[in-house]
Amino acid sequence: MELKHLRTNGAALCLACLLLSGCGAQDTNTSSQAADPASSAAAQAETPAAVPAEEKKAYVVVADDLSNLSLDNAETPVYDRYTLAQRREKGLTTALPAITPYKQGKVAYLTFDDGPDEKNTAAVLDILKQEGVKATFYVTGRNVRNFPDTARRIFEEGHALGNHSYDHDYNRLYASVGNYIEEMEQADEAIYELLGVRPLITRAPSGRMGNFTKAYEDAIAANGYVEHDWNVSSADTAPGNPTAQDFIDNISGQAVTDCVIILMHSSGGHEETVKAVPEIIRILRERGYTFGVVTPMTPQPW
Image 1 (cartoon, rainbow, N blue to C red):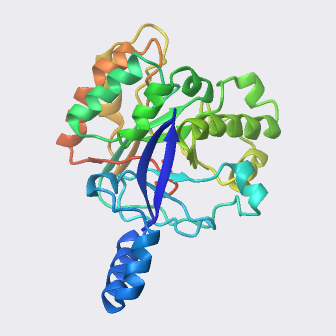
Image 2: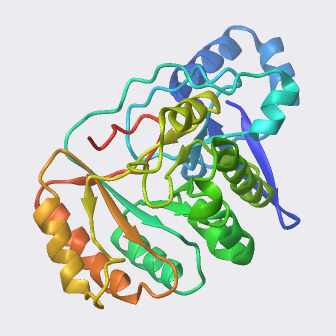
Image 3: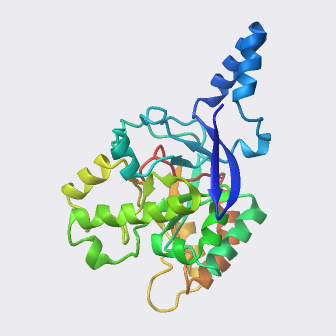
């Protein structure tokens, strides 16, 4: 099993890079070592020490040819070891292959846009940790650079990071397809510089509906991104000073399908969203949902 060594602000962080079929590969290596002691000794000399089991579930890294995009659970984030620029330089593919969506039981995906920040995103992370729930944070590159400790915490606590553009500037993003992809790559670079990986999942600021033409869709696919909007909205950006109870009621009324992707925000000004999160989790659990993180294999919400 391959180990990924990340270096974050000078501190080495060793995490397992699990292939999505990693258990089978591990079993094969074990049996071959038992049959050939000499090979086993040589392999041990070249292979880093085993990582504790609790670190092996951190995240999955896609293969260089993006061929291992299948998933038997909804709880493990998926990242790329390369930026798009690095893939191009190495002559590696950037376009994702056809993907079979993960569908099993009732899964709720809590998603939080526009962060991170040092107050509300941190408060949401505290709640998720207490509840034992994983979520997805669609972050902007600018905020990753402004609040690196919070971004790193999202990653290290096993949540998924998604690309939400560099600075959320609608005028720039939707002026042209080239501008949009440039913003995505800028955000990727900010995340990669901090964590050593980049996300494959994105969410268009304000959503794809009304913003994307076919040219945008084609560019997203060609550059290996999977965009997910939502089918349940907290409406926590609505005017009129809505409260936590409004968000709870909105989500409770809309969460009726087996796959619910729930839109919330965790940036500045969303204190009422933070207040709503524990009750939202309670309601979803009561209805039989488990909680997942968005990956390229997550079903689209329509």
